[in-house]
Length: 216
Image (tube, rainbow, N blue to C red):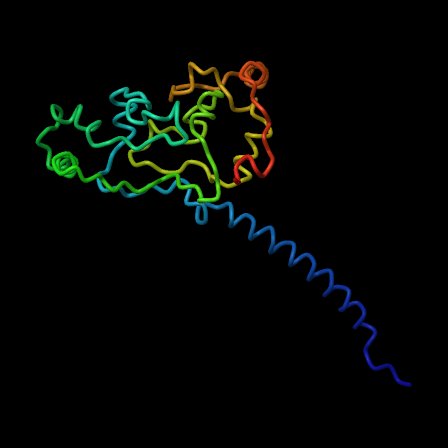
């Protein structure tokens, strides 16, 4: 019986199989990188707001502490969006007649809240508590980035699960003394790992990586 396929068919078949394996693996790697990219996570994308509030001006320029506006961050799961009255504490005197701030004055007069666009928006199936992280020595800039350099607020980190787990598995790389949690000028010391290990023990930080920690 004559040979149906040319001898090269075996080589072509092997190359095709191996090529398909590498192609699929490469495609999976590409999809994973795309999933981590700012295009998907929307990290470092400045958000338009009803009023273009500048953290850079208020934090770096005026030296306002995070807790002045985000009053519940130490005691609640939410950092809290400041009510219009908080804005008016200053702006009833400073730039009181600025057309730029008319939406603030209108909100104060009518009692209608300003509809801010949420920047850090976790999925509904994720449980996150600000107060726990703050009281365990996680600094504001660790997660939110250098807000004192943001004319418009953006999401600094991906907020993906692998980002959270990176800290939960190795908290000593990120924790700082409680007195420095709200400092935007905090600089990580050269002995961060040694300091972090001491703080992990002192603050009784657990390496919580089970699903039920965040998915409840």
